[in-house]
Length: 379
Ligand SMILES: Cc1ncc(COP(=O)(O)O)c(C=O)c1O
Image: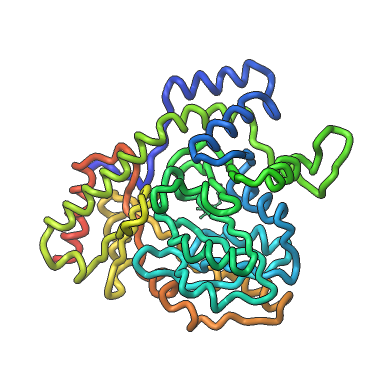
């Protein structure tokens, strides 16, 4: 059997030509392509402003800097996410306050948020993990009631919607990543901040460029988080394909669901649990994540590897278990985390398994993955 990868890159002649055009132009930064990509991506989302950055991580840092997060501030964030959701505000000295997940969608549980708000809370960071939106309405209501900022970590959710509204056009600021395995990439690292707030947009625009509006004066304490022209040119081409790729990912997920359902009644629910799309969400399946029950996740992963089928764990350690975060809370805030407050996160970390997912994943390959999982549980 040929190897089935977890994700697949897309490079065509148009992308090669776009890269070549930049190389021969001699203009590598601060040029027309970055501006065009910012305009095109923000328009795609429906937001007024787009600010391109060197990665999703630096986009998050730019946003947290613009909000003025600092030591003593508290930020409400899920523990079940990629570490870069939180490390940028931790660098600024702020304190993460972890929220458990809804065990069905793996996204931040809005019911938990209110109990965690204190006079020090400055922001809430919902993460649309795997491409499924957080239930944002109750979070937005709390943010309005308590005067908090909402930064949507949308790094895995290009093209996703919540109640028919585009992810990225809902909270105060939204962040996207173009890391190579994401639903669209810039063939390297890259990120984007989008917002409808003109003051925040202006601040973020200069923060990512040494805090400068003109070459001589740094108004704000900024750094260099700029995107290059090369990446922006590739992003422009990739963005054209995104709607079609989203539909193909959704079709692949539908095929997984159908073939798993046909595979025999005992597999689903007795051994594995399939991902769910809530009625208010349009899932873009950055990842197709199943749960593997009864402590079998790691042995199934190993078995799939032996069959040349790639799989992944996103993520093997929750944020509250990361040594750097434990140290930050102890050193700066003299606090330890009570793990018993995050039961759904702790359970998910032991059971989640990401199966191959990319737009051109064939029905034949999906059938091979499902058959392999069925065989594993039969043996
Ligand atoms: C949820 C989430 N947040 C933040 C990031 C950071 O993005 P990047 O890798 O582009 O820095 C990623 C992607 O890796 C992510 O998936």
